[in-house]
Image 1: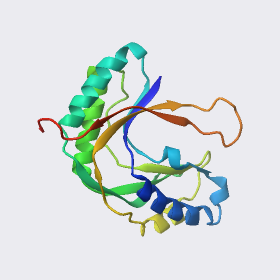
Image 2: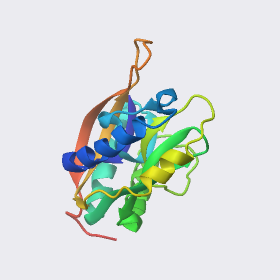
Image 3: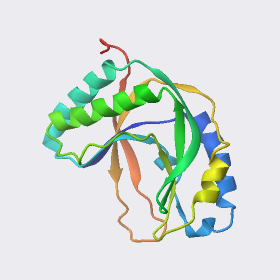
Length: 191
């Protein structure tokens, strides 16, 4: 199964973001981008890729431990950026150090559970909004996103998500996401 660990913004924050995305989609050239939908709006902490089902119990145990050791923290969707000329994203503000720590703990949990992980990179909190198959000038969208700031919320849980890739081959078909498990933050010894 294809898995990743994530922080999910609450519905009211997604509603705020949806209004801004609607404005972005009305901008010139936006029709050439592949826009993600609400089900894909999350902050990935650790992408694990294909995970053997036999590793799942150990992975869940380690993710639960990492969640317990991380206190809840404030967050908001804020601003945005791009990865090169192919991916547009919304950023985050607030407890970014706590979010990085949670990302490091989820990455370590996966490694210790036997999940082969890609090379470790410094965590960049981002929520992907759009992608392009070819190089695109994403700067106007980033400029518009700079003004965006959602309401603040308290991140209180870690979520393990299964990503089911599209199989229809139809244009616009998107991955489907299923919550595998969630764990509350901060119910154990921090550190």
